[in-house]
Amino acid sequence: MPEDSLTALVTGASAGLGLEFCRQLAERCDVIIAVARRRDRLQKLAQELDGSAEVHGIVADLSTVEGVAATLEALRQKGPVDYLVNNAGFSPFGQFADLPIDVQQEMVSVHCNATLALCRGAVPFMRERGAGVIINVSSLGALMTGKGMAVYGATKAFLNYFSESLQAELAGTGIVVQALCPGFTRTEFHEAMAQHGFERQRIPEELWMESAAVVQASLQAIGTGEVIVVPGEANQALATSLLAKAGAG
Image 1 (cartoon, rainbow, N blue to C red):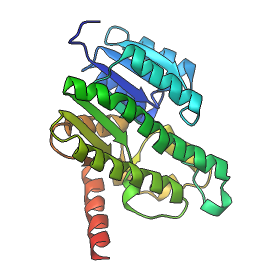
Image 2: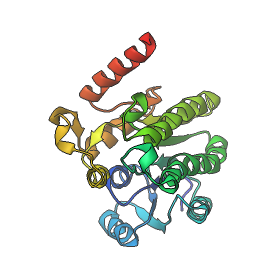
Image 3: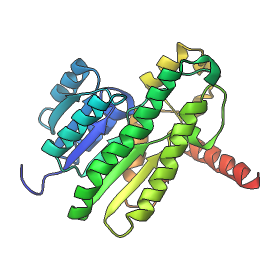
Image 4: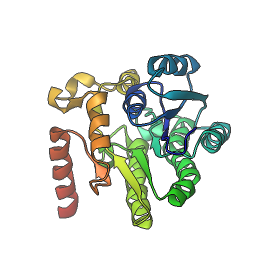
């Protein structure tokens, strides 16, 4: 691989925002390391991007030690990476006291522990090269409290704080850190939540966005100095309102 080639590692790459990140980063990068649990989806992605980027599919469950280790090994062998997108995630929608604790702990592992491990694996190489982009996919839910989302929102608030602090630590290194906070996005994510009582029809149409627009906003924000990136005018207005209320409280 030529020294000037660019490599991206994307987790949760088989659907939704992760899939769209792979598509749009294929326009910028020569190699995509796509991490997901579903082998068939990764194979389909490789076929789709054939001719645009070299795709290495890594089948891994990031809620497990083995899955994180396999992804770190891929980072070591196929990297170093210029873009790291920590997108893998899920939400077991429901009341904290009613949901199985092991499922909620798995979510913490995917959202927080896996993100920490992959950032720790990527940052030294990025710092040595004097450049790099880390995008931690958070949520507008990090800025608000809500029933049925206690642990999910807490993990996303963690990602926001971590991203802002990491960017402060890496100031002057050439590394950009972003916490992407999308609102309601038309992906399989909310389809899964609907099976547990989430009512999509109660969300105003203007608050929904397409994956392509969310990812485009994320990539366009690179280099602007923004760490917390909220895509979409309606979501930005809601975020401003939420932050104002928090400040007043």
